[in-house]
Length: 311
Image (tube, rainbow, N blue to C red):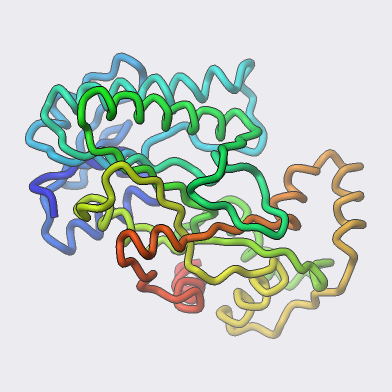
């Protein structure tokens, strides 16, 4: 492992898990946070801007794992969402990377998003070689950050590693995954018994394991890696797996054609939400597996069990 790692976004869902992983290994690191934190090895850096001073956080670090970001939100109230995403995800990221180069950081692991590839797949999984096709401000900002980092790496010799996760689940997961578990807990019958989409996901343990590998593997430098558990599921299969892990009597999942559900969602102004629930999004992780000799250490069943146990 590197001598010392800077982990940005250390208080976040993935960042906290990655820091706990490093703690368990005894790896030296500093985790940056926006607000005061009493946990050891955490350093408050404030808001992420193009002018944030990273000098103290970067002292002695040879690898940066950049997780902090303005994340995708369902109902963005910003007057100019793209500008808001660019300020944090592009300008602040490149500011950090430039300072990292000046402090002698050797490798920069950037956690991007599968939204750089696009919003969905139709029979052919996304690959790391696909022409990017982001369609929302968040995905656009992530792609622009990738390109800015690639240009900086070419100029300076910084070892850049880009990781594009799909939906990440695990203990403490929120957003749509949490809502599905809540619906199952309440026993509400759902019209999702005949959804035949395919969705790639990645368990928190598997993503953390891959990030650790990206920090140290010699063949990771200069690469783009897609990541998943390697087992795609339909939303119907996911609900049944969650229900089984809860040890509950299966919630009734009555069949309703996906086209009809999509039409109803459109009338209600929920087309984007319906697309995420009913559409397919698959990723091909063959390049990740072969380049890094990586195998997801935790199965989907075990990942779901741990997620449900925490819930």
